[in-house]
Amino acid sequence: MTSLDHKEKALGYFGRRLHCSQAVLAAFAEECGITETQALRLGSCFGSGMRKGEVCGACTGGLMVLGLLYGFDGTDPSDKLRADRVNDMMMRRFAEKCGSYVCNVILGCDISTQEGVAHALENRLFTELCPRMVAAAVETVEEIIAEESGGQGSDEPARDRS
Image 1 (tube, rainbow, N blue to C red):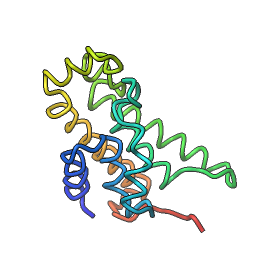
Image 2: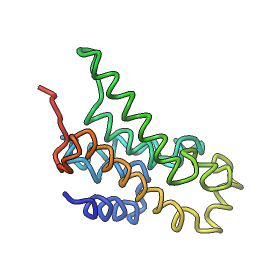
Image 3: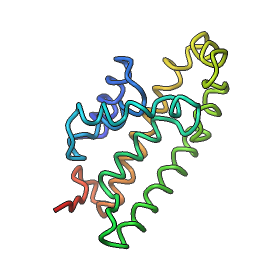
């Protein structure tokens, strides 16, 4: 799948009023070896910074993708180092692109409160700003996958889950 395909797919999910976290994870479901339904369910509790304005759900969705592709299960210590590395890359790069990885900071309001949600709705933040966060998360995940695949630009990340 190409970069544009992942981004279009993620924005399509988000446009259907799914959470940002669901949109990003589901766009990579096939590469992660999970179904669309599994991705949508897994990502369903992480939108809007876990509904508390904490780490942006789009960033969290990206971290879930990277965890499925490069995470560790305790059998190989080097896998933990790789998981830590891709986590740090995702968090740093997302913050560089978006100004922060904290939802409330990105939106400029506290969406854990009714007043904050009202402000975000009145100012169309969820429909005008959040899609840019979804796109930025997809782009960042794709950059990391390309680097972890040896810079070959391969669409198939190295996954050894036998």
